[in-house]
Image 1 (tube, helix red, strand yellow):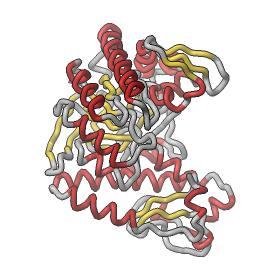
Image 2 (cartoon, rainbow, N blue to C red):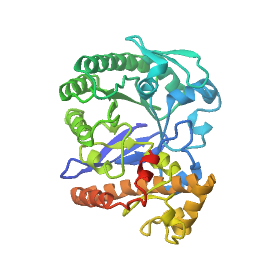
Image 3 (cartoon, rainbow, N blue to C red):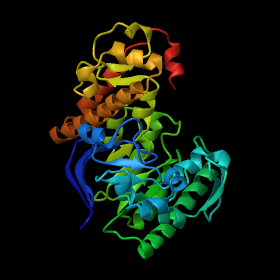
Image 4 (cartoon, rainbow, N blue to C red):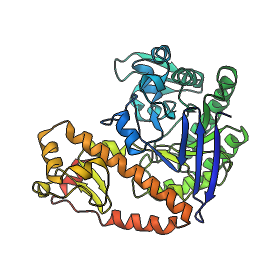
Amino acid sequence: MAFRFEVLKTDPTGARLGRLETPHGVFDTPAFLPIGTAGTVKGISQDQLEALGAQIVLANTYHLYLRPGHERIRSLGGLHAFMSWPHPILTDSGGYQVFSLAELRKVTDEGVTFRSHLDGTEHFFPPERALEVELALGADLIMVLDECIALPAEEAATRAAARRTLEWARRSREYFGAHGDPRRQMLFAIVQGGACAAIRRENAEELAALDFPGYAIGGLAVGEAHETTCGMTEEVTKILPGEKPRYLMGVGKAEDIADYVMRGVDFMDCVLPTRNARNGWLYTSHGRVVIRSARYAEDLRPPDGACQCPVCRRYTRAYLRHLFVCGEMLGPILNSIHNVHFYLERMRGIRAAIAEGTLAVRAAQWRQQAGAEEQPADPREEAEGA
């Protein structure tokens, strides 16, 4: 079989240690996926990603459809060849852009009509079209089209989006059965339901009955409280089949990742490591460092003395601050390498803790470290980096 998911051990918290075999290699779970929206993780080359230990990356269907186009990528050998990444790739369906580009789209039961944020041209995306694009891209793990709504939301709107997501999942499954190849690509359904536990449970049960190869949890980390994200995740993972991989979309903060894993999530993704790197925020074992602060102008320490990434082994805080203040492009690059390493190292630590049965203890330690983060000299630094 081209795909094989195996749970190797379960922690007392419910966290799962596993591995997922794909046509382009194996990745260990729980895993964090660096985001390569347009076929690149911003500021980091593929060689550097491999050196950091990244086993899988995420690319964005919506953006690649608009530029350079899925047919062009297909003609060039598919996404793996196009971006010179021979390892597993996950593509989302564009459903999040339905949410984030609210002013440029219209949603009906038939699909999504949107205007390109690049040139204003109009495009119609039924769920079948989204899968057509993903089949052309050729990623290993692919998502059905879903409707992600903003929170908070009224129950009627939440239920309507969940119903539409379910129907789109049925249509996507039929389309994949006729046009896809389960030996080459693993199709994931996406559970929706906003912050309503009853709707989440109902949607999860109905999607589980459709027997997809994998399941994603969407529509969270869109502004709701962390406790709500955890609660909705737990409601869903209790229902989803235990032998299938579970993907929590678009999360999260470094100190929160273990909380999701302890609720049975197998992999996740988030823009924070690279986005915050470009804003001069560095994750460290003793909290976040806002590198643009003037107090680092003569600081000869590495960003994190406990870190073994290439940046911490070679560069000082003073130099990184200098790069940021001068607007040198090397600054965001080095910051991004460090932050992605931090997230990948955190996942390695989580996997080791699950193997030892000590994840709850380690998670509490990580959260305490995050709470003791270095305070900026000027409180405005926090707001300016958002």
